[in-house]
Image 1 (cartoon, rainbow, N blue to C red):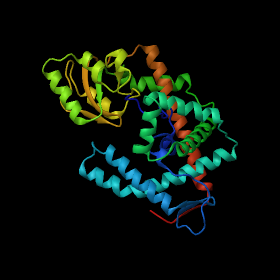
Image 2: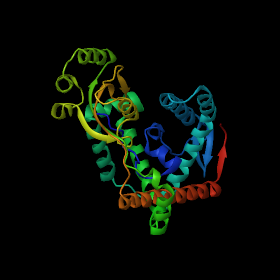
Image 3: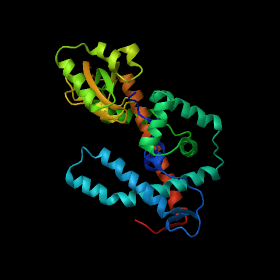
Image 4: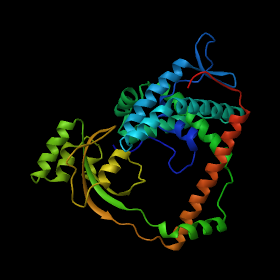
Length: 327
């Protein structure tokens, strides 16, 4: 499997919602009322964020940020790391504000909704065993804790839908966006790629050596790949663009290759080590006007929804009783 974990792709949920709906938010601990004797990092409308919660989240956020900082130069990385403590506490405060408001507005999450989400995620990562391994090794939580996090995520999703309901792009707005951006409105570059997923870097390097000596990629994918789908598709993922629901490291590795090329260094992701081959490429082309206008309308709608939720969040902050003791 190389798909991303469930996320809010296609929905502009801004910083707090993005944090809650991505893997980073899944590292947050529970947000119940805390004992008065515990040291406080912040208090949000009477609800305590303890120093223990904050430091735990900060540690995990630093680990997450480290894995995402490969494309930063030294100065950017230093600036990001120095700002991280405040960013983490800000996001924890925002999460509290949003969940409190969701409950106040009567947003509810059915047990079936949580079960459906978790079942889908288990299937997307290759089954129960792999799902539990990811919880243990990457998210560092048990399934009961994860279920509570999913419930929080769905609460926020429900509130977001309330806030943005009815916000659409007018034909005039879509036309204006198209007129201003039509030179850039093209189909996305795509690649058709195969991959072989291995558990260790040593195994992946051995496969690369075999391929360089002329071994058949499709045959090795069937025989050696730990991705369950390889048995039926010979590792062929078809065509995908940079916005595909695949882990970023894999997309970066695939698009770095020319047609017919094979990775000479295994691509590491949360699922293991990948050997990738690009079979074909499709270069960008101009979108037909009707499709371009449709895309323009979606982008304008996304921007308007984003602005509406940002304004809503700022109002929650201004009205909230917030005390900060850390960062």
